[in-house]
Image 1 (cartoon, helix red, strand yellow):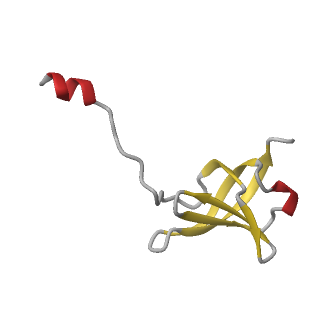
Image 2: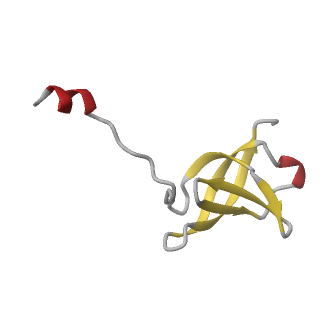
Length: 85
């Protein structure tokens, strides 16, 4: 193994369009509220939060992914808890 390989071992690049599986639990910020639902954006991936109240915008919440479309990087998630609870 070269010194460069040893130095860069374990490095990886993050994607701007992360994918999720139904049932996966993540933490994210509610970044907006549109058409009666909260929105969490993670890079270019958009999750709709149908149970989010408008006052949760800019709040970090724990989410469970309910469904996710890997082809357009959109999905629906349910709020498990927010950092205010």
